[in-house]
Length: 292
Image (cartoon, rainbow, N blue to C red):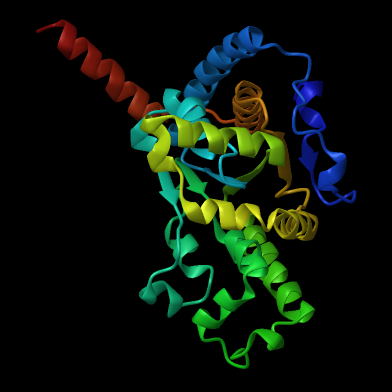
């Protein structure tokens, strides 16, 4: 991996602090250089996706978490535009349905996992259960968990158990061939403000804005603490977090693409090699076709 992206990885061997990370880091790139590099990286990812599909040994789960207006949707649109849609699935997770509340909090996410050979993209994910739910613990009551009928009963031990469940879940997936890439798009509060104003001023972007976004913005510090805790509790060597500076969307897109490319290359994917019998049949078929 290129040096400018190595520092974005958190894998549990050091304490992560949001206030000590730069949201406007660009790794020495300018906008034009980053755009050119992104084009090349997308081509490489496309080739690697074909090998992933053909080898059928791994699946890739890409998780995006961020505050509103951090650029998750545009990152998915730009970075994934070079992928074959037949081998790629995108899921966006919102408030659980009544059916989903009748199961454990990981159930709906397990159902959305990519099959071997495919890439799954989760726009928000199982981490909402230790992010928005931690900022709004009253949401936990909708899960009807035994012993948790009041917010006051949701203690530190509850969150420790939930982090443990997530680590176990990801460890199980990794052991069974699912490669997990977790991206936190780290946008500054000032940049979020500018993007909100842009959405308000531009009629074509009004639909992206919700009054609820402002209510959540007022809880910025609480969210930053929840993200910091979640990242520190669930970053591991096999399932690290990637902290993506998101104030410059063009750099965030490049960083994400380069990290995906690097991870796929590390799998040493290969096209299947046919056995001698099958290769012989190919030669026979070719001879027959040429003789028509």
